[in-house]
Length: 209
Image 1 (cartoon, helix red, strand yellow):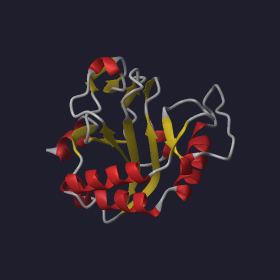
Image 2 (cartoon, rainbow, N blue to C red):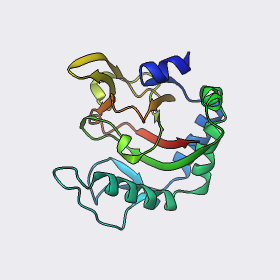
Image 3 (cartoon, helix red, strand yellow):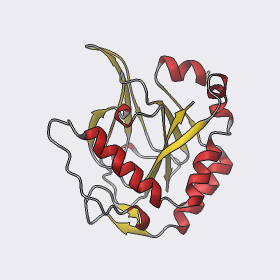
Image 4 (cartoon, helix red, strand yellow):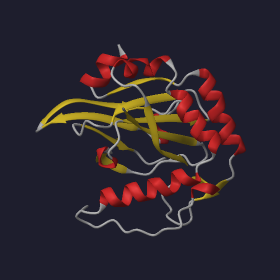
């Protein structure tokens, strides 16, 4: 089922495996969270996440690939070993079994972690040159209220034709596995309006060989 949906629709939604969910919550509790005072995008970021290099994205987007890949590499170098281990462990779950039909191995290329969400219009992340984007949401509520904001909407568009558009609430343990190599599949994110609640996002980005 996941196999067909991943390649035809461009993503599938499921629950993160329980063992991985527990490990991710442990990361949340053990992480030193700081205000995103430098960029002001998120509610909080991990203390190790803070970037030292300064890059400005050109308005025409011509340097976006270089910008995103360099920043991604810098953050990955600072990522705790325990979180990298979780990202690799995730691919051993049954949700990723079908990839092994076509590929022999994977490489975890980038990891992002943040609390909160910014308002960002439809976009795709194929610019980073990777195959699969996994987004995992950990929140204070198993039943997210839409008025809180923080939703993600998936969309597939071919030319002017919209094939689907689906809004997904970040309920605790929700996992999206996105075909990052397909530029027809886009997503947008709604800003978090209720700042009294935590909305943690773990982003794992893979290449398959």
